[in-house]
Image (cartoon, rainbow over all chains, first blue to last red; front, side, top):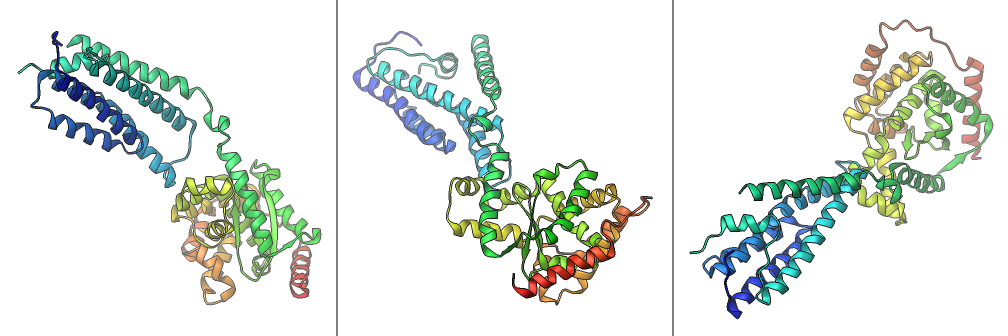
Length: 139
Length: 267
């Protein structure tokens, strides 16, 4: 992302995109579609704002996509287990703990990003930062 | 672009490495959730509950002949006899069923309805097949869900136990599971040198005697008995096994007389 000095309002909106992502991700672990929907709605609501706000909304949105898929697998696997279509296995717990670990890392990274962005500092996530640069261009 | 792709691949690799690492742990044992311990807990809960509902017969004169049949089938099929807990209950319902953790429950009325020990062996082999193939836990999990079973194992209301117990004792397995149990039972019988035909005869007889109230439970849990009997005959045909009787005629009749005597005397 190009060097830019955002206004206070922009910093607040950009930080909110992470907070929205965090809130949605917390609900989204048991019900994965929620975090995708909430982040998409927030992204759409802010897509006509400044490049700075759009950039962070985009980063917050695309960071949810891999989580959405791994959480969805966990969600339906758990449903199948509870309904008796699958047997409980050690691998299920291995997957559960892996998913929980990556979700926790996402929570921490999201809170860190929200705080930093609110202070006006630029935060670019591994993979997602570069991907956001490719997707989100200045107007 | 290539930098993003490389970073994405590294992220995927990290995810898989973490998953692989977690997968090295036997979580079911660590969390004490392995099927064996859950099944054992459920088996104990069900049997404790069930024995309070009916008269549990512990008389060795009655149990030993039936136990010898179970022992013979197990030995011939490399099944650990010690794993199977045989229970004989005094009741007028013609029924036999398997509970979790290999509790084999046989009703006295079923023994009295069998014309010889080979018919009884057929029923026993069928129930052992359900146990060995893991049908009991599969039926329970599929019917009530894992969460209910885990709740029950952790201490649950007697109503939940009664309802799920009814499921095991008085409702049928899936047709495919019954079919698999029949085929396995025929194999067990033939390995043990027991003629499967009397088992087929028993199935045909209960199919004809559908109007008899005593057979109500057994019929409801084992539908399509005539078709199953035909399958049992088909499976056993063409096999040249020398069949033998496990109990003498006198021994079998004595068992039934003792059972009838206990049933009528109310002991």
